[in-house]
Image 1 (tube, rainbow, N blue to C red):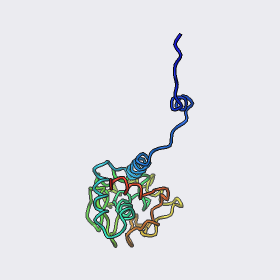
Image 2 (cartoon, rainbow, N blue to C red):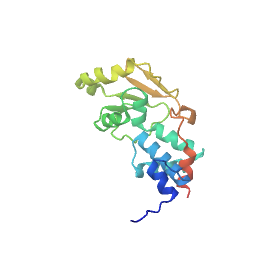
Image 3 (tube, rainbow, N blue to C red):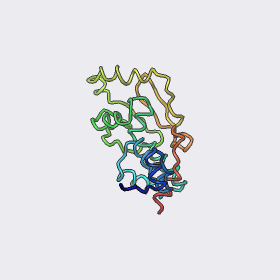
Image 4 (cartoon, rainbow, N blue to C red):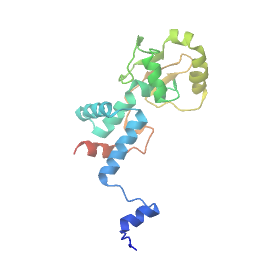
Length: 184
């Protein structure tokens, strides 16, 4: 009869006890959480990080500001879609106008005083969608961020200023961990 030698690590694993994540593990988990929240792939996220490092403000705050300024996120924040994924679909299908011009890229960065609206032709053709999704969400008491202005009746919004860190509605994001991860 063989006796199986066990270590403390194996005993913990058998009991379902998890070890504390390493610093790298925490940084990676934070990056993955932000990527998943905004629906980005690694290459897109890396591009926004590089843009943030070139800005004059703190890299972490600049990164979150850039992610908030993406058109798909702005559509979501203006309550014109239920999720960011749905906002991306609306944009790609050509149902969104920025300053009166169709935009097909969800990664489009909005600027100050940009007017974001739904295409009137799309509103005509997609009346059921507008009633069931957009109008229903507009009636819910979800607050639009202070850096955006919403005109409910017109189904459009305006960017009043660039978002700052305090405007990001996910306070659990620790952007300094992402900066540390990429600075290695």
